[in-house]
Image (cartoon, rainbow, N blue to C red; front, side, top):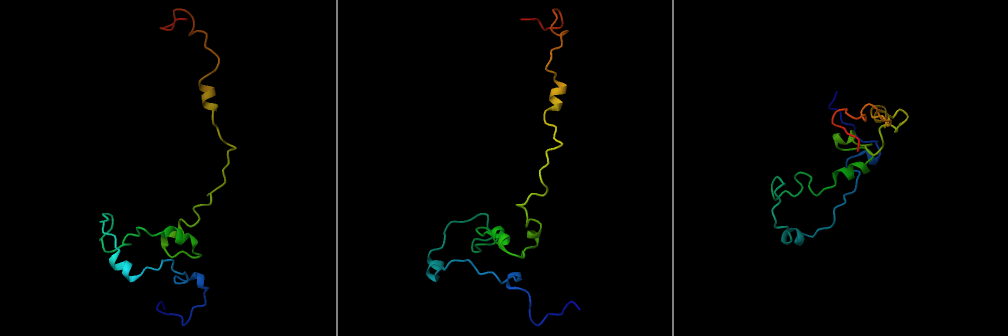
Length: 121
């Protein structure tokens, strides 16, 4: 039942993995052979595999441009630019605690002479 393969696809071309044109530049064979980078990249798996861990590729930008994401992990971050819920500051309590706790009026018993170590100036 699960091994059925339809004879043809009727989905739009944008829904296919192969519906996107490659954006690689034209690199001649001479440049590939004789103009290789000779420095060693420590973060790569092996030096001869250039894009082993997607270094130098723009995977996230390509996934955002697609109609249907190819990577399974891109489903979770597809609409990350949109806010999750609107900002509501109707119930905000910004400075009420500070105004209640630290009173602006003075306590007269503290400033009386002879109270603790505080002496009037």
